[in-house]
Image (cartoon, rainbow, N blue to C red; front, side, top):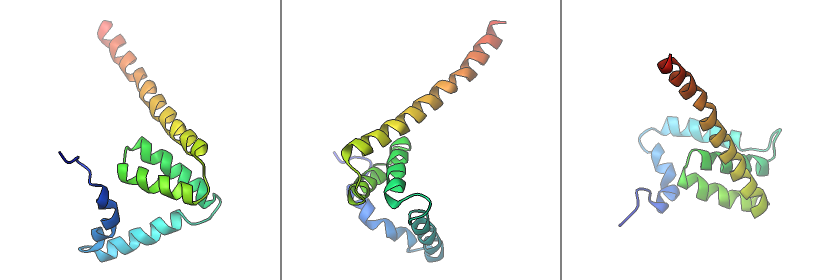
Length: 110
């Protein structure tokens, strides 16, 4: 049984511009500028993207930025650490929302 995601979709990502070429052009220019060398290196940006890809659970982005990280010189230790940072932020965000649960529980208990 095929999964929900199709691995070859990433290779056809540019097809999203077929019916909206101006929007695709603007997205592509912006995306390229975001990942260009700047205050952060391309390698650092790829590590951030890899962590975010895990936080938003995008399998396409995980595949793409795993490859990009390796191409930009990151090693598996650095990439694993980036995933742990993303996981810690995601876990922390869940826990801090527990404060909303505590306030709701206290209100109901009054």
